[in-house]
Image (tube, rainbow, N blue to C red; front, side, top):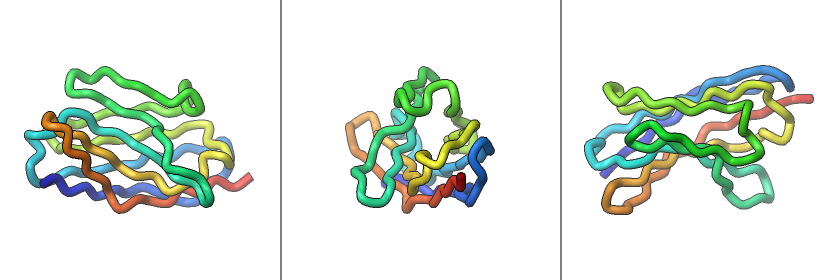
Length: 116
């Protein structure tokens, strides 16, 4: 089992920045990728970014150039740095972990609200 706890969500003005954190505990040695998804009201959950064990990254087109993802392996924590935030970035952001065996774990979510 892998447990995930997100933090860092807040209300911010358009153009501002936020950094989300997700701390993993439990069987962290099983972790392959760590990433973020988001879900806005009335929408499906969508992919935002991920980082692999070798530190390669992938981003959704909607956040490329504005968001970065990083990982502190010693702390088993993944960070999502969000810059130049837009109102359409408003959503609940969920941390996601996929293990080497393909098991998927989710955090409880953290609210990000961007005001115009």
